[in-house]
Length: 313
Image (cartoon, rainbow, N blue to C red; front, side, top):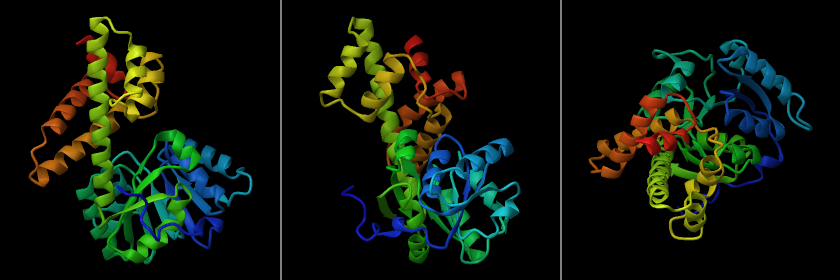
């Protein structure tokens, strides 16, 4: 893509304005993301499925120097007064279960509120959830992120934003900008999540291919570190080779913070999307199968553990 869409960058980060922000999902990515929202001066109400985590993170946020006030939502009703609610959750099914009870609102959001789903969700389910929310006067914007936990902490995430309602998108942007200025307006509702899935498919393909090459090279007698150095100075360089394989596989950390179930889920979303548009996608099929096999054998582990599984096969 050519870069962030003109008009999405403004001076909205200079002041938090009057919006009260709810933030649901305080995991590896959610916690540093909401910290930047608080740092920008927003009044924030946080919630997580783990009550102890909710209380702990709220207390930490309340101590952010110069930050806005932060409180813990012990009950969904505590989010009732929020103007913008951000969700950062594992799947679109969980997002829907937090927001809706069937076709009724589970979160007591008032008409005019905007939900910004920054999770890696299924675009089809996003559209369906958006249609139900719209019947209650609540707008949904999808704004998934890319960049891992380090960029989440730095506030430099790449964000893909889709929306049917331009006014809702404009309402969401000042909050989203606290987490990054690289905001790409991708089109209608669901396109952000489609772009995120396709991005992670490409990343997953690079990870799988690099693992395959490293295993073959090692069996032939090549030094894995030398291979990574060459890849990173050659045309084979990718995010996986430069950020993942060196420290986490060659050096043996295996702790990127990105779980194998999440990568597998994102690749499968991309695979389903390609099937839905009638696209023959043998690479997506192969990557999905390889990750699925590792997931079945390993369960909920860091995605880098798939390398050790494949290496033994």
